[in-house]
Image 1 (cartoon, helix red, strand yellow):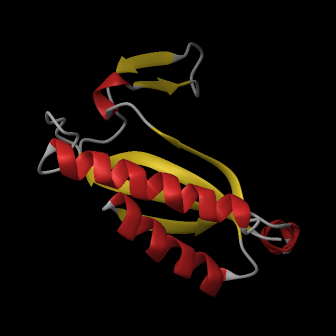
Image 2 (spheres, rainbow, N blue to C red):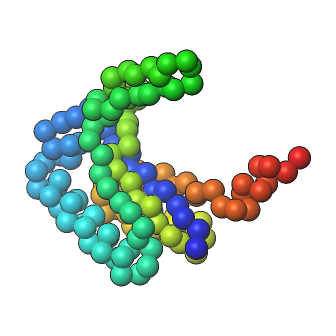
Image 3 (cartoon, rainbow, N blue to C red):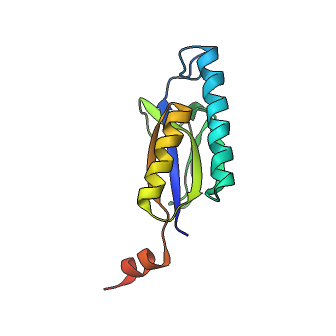
Length: 128
């Protein structure tokens, strides 16, 4: 079954309640996201999911030169950042989009859906 990355975007600015308007709203979102995760597992879609620390905790690594370069902070300066993600299995893109809509509602964030490479997509890249 094809796999998809569902990336959750939220404000880059770290606030007291991680971008939620109140502690109660944050806790309700956590509960709703937990229920969504349970549904994914129960229905055979769940592969892996987790939340991320704020982008300010990132270290960017560029190993393309003779010596790797390490820079504190995110690769890109943006108003929004990836706050968490799901890796799911879905029959097709339409099903993945429906699951992303449910996840977006649960976590109260915008969700980007991207398919993972498949054997067919890699073969297409390699063809002349």
